[in-house]
Image (cartoon, rainbow, N blue to C red; front, side, top):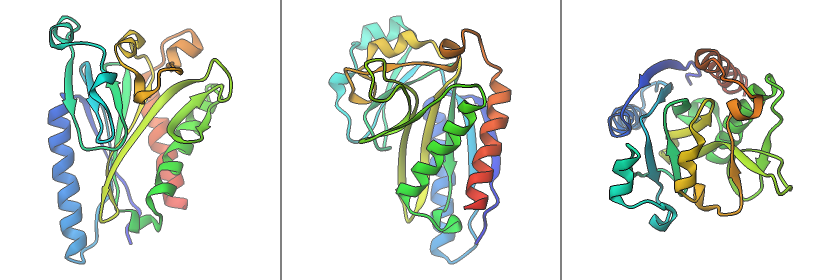
Amino acid sequence: MNRLIEYIDWKLMDYNQALAEQELLFKDTIEQKLKGNITQNYLVFCEHPHVFTLGKSGEQQNLLLNYIQLQAHNATFVYTNRGGDITYHGPGQIVGYPIFDLANFEMGLKQYIHTLELAIINVLATYNIITTRLDGATGVWLDVGLPTCRKICAIGVRSSHFVTMHGFALNVNTDLSYFGYINPCGFVDKGVTSMEKELGKKVDMNEIKTLLRTEIEKLFYLN
């Protein structure tokens, strides 16, 4: 059982390239697991150029732009194999791809997602941004139960043989106007926010990465 987590920062990377790189790590981890070998755990952070991604349970009508309009906004559209509906990725957003063998942490998928959410909730609390979960939905939210309910972090995961890929997208200094071109995660009655919007100032991306990495390593190592 290996609870060590190898950290990788891909910086700004095209979504499809990142997906291919993830698949390599994901498939290799499963292969090692099926052979009975010790498996590695990878925590990958990156940012993506403007892209809308649609999960397996999503509906394309939640994308409100056509192909020409996508080009005009310098954005792309990708079908992907994670759970969840549609979301947006772009510069100023930290995307985390934990490729973990959950057997190493003795947890199931539901506990894994809850632990990721808790790590993000804890990091945001250090900036006095108070967040929580929303029943019936993944991710991290502000003002749950109020008309001002809004999402600051999306989560969508794929797993096989209890090895995970995909992960979370935390809006730090994200251009939120791009969320206006979709029904985020299929919701039409809830907003989206960012750390920059909540705090009224830009936030250091490297500082957030360090805090996220530390909190994730702590919660999973101590589980």
